[in-house]
Image 1 (tube, rainbow, N blue to C red):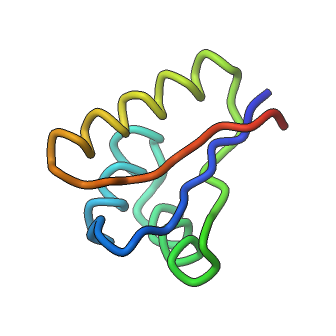
Image 2 (cartoon, rainbow, N blue to C red; image 1 turned 135 degrees about the horizontal axis):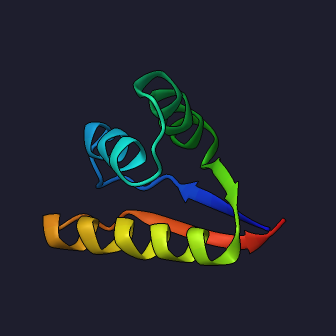
Length: 80
């Protein structure tokens, strides 16, 4: 299993982060906001724990969407 971690940055708007968490990682609005605020205040936040294939494909999709929107959204995976 692999953890997906969201890293705070000073450029990606909070609402876009929430959008990614809801649309890509299937979080409800409340959980997405909590994850975003935790990353904003503490520098990073756990998004969830997934199989390797799910974690890597969702991180890739989130990075692609962020890049298309012009944002440097930072996410990474690590072994749980």
